[in-house]
Every structure is written in structure tokens, then in C-alpha cells.
Amino acid sequence: MIINSIIRALELWICVLPFTIVGILLASIAIEFRIFNRLFPVLKPILQRAHFSPGSGLAFITAFGSPIAAVAMVAELYAEKKIDQKEALLVTVATWFPQTIYETIAYIFPIIPLLGMVGIAYIFLFVLNGIIVAILMFIIGRALLTEKNYEFVRDNEKIAVKAALKRSVKSSINLLKRLMIVGLPVSIVAIALINIGIFDALPKYLGWMPLPPEALAIIPLKIANPMAAYITLADLMKTGILDFKLALLTLLIASAFVSLRYIFAHRLPYYFGIFGPVVGVKITSVSATLRLGLTGLMIFALILFL
Image 1 (cartoon, helix red, strand yellow):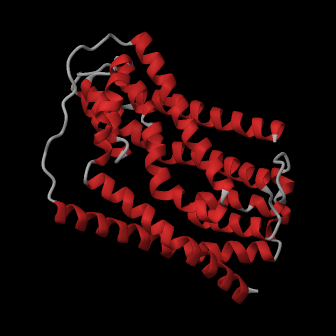
Image 2 (tube, helix red, strand yellow):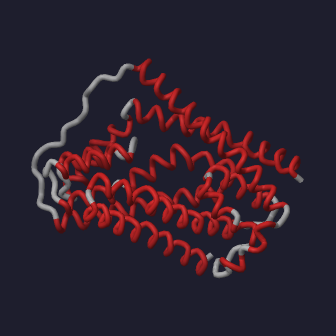
Image 3 (cartoon, helix red, strand yellow):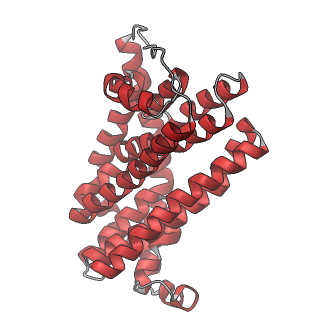
């Protein structure tokens, strides 16, 4: 049983690893060469119509390459009183969209060869969630913020190509090491547990979810290691346990749990620390309500219409 689980996990990892390497490396290169900053001409009219200040606009664009750096920029603008509390909240929540693009390129894009149309549908819904959140923040910003008439400032600093490539490769290798060290053992354990039927007892506690017992294993697995969850899900699809609808539903439900854990375990303390308790709690509350609410609507629609 254990040997079969190890062989199955290795086969799945060998299949997905080349695409994972490419995805992580491309994301790292994009950050180092500030490729996301090239979105400036496209996003400038949108950001101006949303009445975001130049600093907030640059923070939003920065989030395509580094969401954490973008939020830090907003916090600095707020601390220096260059933007008010409303703008800080709107811009920070709006960065959910650039963050979805970043995460899609670095982490989720490699699942397409594994999951096929299910992976494409999941990526579409994942990005759509971020787009809707950003659009809502832009609309509210236009209604509540005052119009800004001055120009955005572009970053024209020259990039040392060799140094940037070295940093890209180094950061990609470090991330891949962490991914393999944690992900491969988790995949082996997960497949072994599924094979022995350990998750058959889960419906007793999660019976309200319209999923087979094996699919419920994906929920804690996605919290522990997303790539391992995708690989395990692919195995369930290959063996016929999950069809298109159930596989996509599994991903969305698991995503909701992951988002909930991420928001309260990471985002709340982070926002609390850099914005203070009042603004931090407001940002977390709005972000959690929108993200989880939209995911819930997608799950409901999937159950009803597919």
C-alpha cells in the first residue's frame, strides 16, 4: 500500500514538475524585471477614474509582482497622511485582483496539464473573483474619493539583467525546494490515506457538503500544501471518483476554507500590525466578506446549474 502510494505520488509529481518550474520562474523574472509595471499605460485611466492617488495607483500595479510590498506601500502612504482611511481600505482590498494574477502565474497555472478543463475553469473563477472585487472597489472609490488631477510617476530605474536573472533563479530554486520538501511527502500520505479509506468518516462531520468522502480529503490537503492537493485531485479524476462538476466543486469549497484560514491567520495580523487595529479589522472584514461571499455564490451556482 505504501509503496504503491509512493509510486503514484512520484508519477504525478514528475508530470507536473516541469510546468511548476516554468510557472515559478516566469513569475520571479516578471517581478525582477518589473514587467507588471508595464501595465501602467493600461491601468492609469482606470485608476484615475477610481480617484486613486498616484501613490495608491503605483501600489496597485506593484501588487501584480509583490502583493506584500504593495500593501506595505499603502500603509506607508496612510501613515504619512498622503491618503485617508477610506482610500487605504479601498486600495488594499482592490489588490486582491493583482494578487490573483500573481498567484495564478506562480502557483495555479501549472495545474492545467494535470486537471485539464477543470483547471482552466477553476483559474477562470479564481481570477473572476479578484476582478469583481477590484471593480467594486473602483466603483466605490469613484463615489467616495475626491478626483486627483496630477500625473502618475513611472519607475525608470535601469535593471541589471544578469543580476536580475540570478535573483530570479535563486528565488525560484528556494521556492521549489520548499515545495518539494513539503509537497511530495504530503502527497504520499494523502494518497495512502485515501487508499485505506481514512476519509470515509468525514461525512459525519461535513455531511452538508455534496461531495464523496475521497474528495473531502482535498480540503485539509489544500490548506497544508496546495500543489499536493491538485495532484491528489488529479488522481481522483483519473480513477473516475470525481467528474468535472465534483472536481470543480471540490476546488471551490477547498479554496473557501483556504481563504478563510489565510485571511484570519495571516492577513488579519498583518493588516492589524501595519495599519493599526481599527483600519486593520475593517480591511480584513471587507476583504473576507467579499472573497468568501463571491466564492459562496460560485459554489451555489455550480450546484444549481451544472
